[in-house]
Image (cartoon, rainbow, N blue to C red; front, top):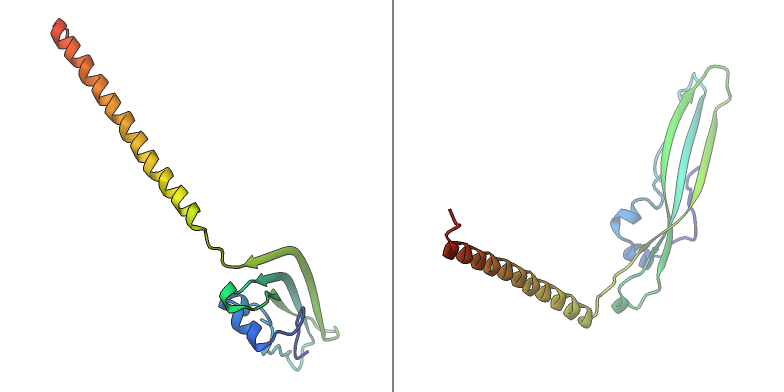
Length: 149
């Protein structure tokens, strides 16, 4: 087996859009050699988990979203006397879609968050000032009555 892939072949533009960590798992078994010993029959087992990736490039690029199928493979070599050399490929297509894209918050969302932070600071400062004021009044009343200590 020289090549194993899932989904459509990707164009040069699609490869340029894919982030490096996604491009690394597309075709991760390519250019790997698995050689059996000449005297002992070997069974090569590959367990493959396939995940769909949807990458939306920035809107300024004016490109369509790229759909790719990345996979992770775990390979084992089993050598037993008296068996026929075989290759087993077990694959599982996971019902998960990983979506990558850029999302910008609007300016009014920034202003709303900023107002919430500023308002929270004022409320907290007001509560602390009220606590300190009430404590000082209580101490002054106790001092006037001579019960301070």
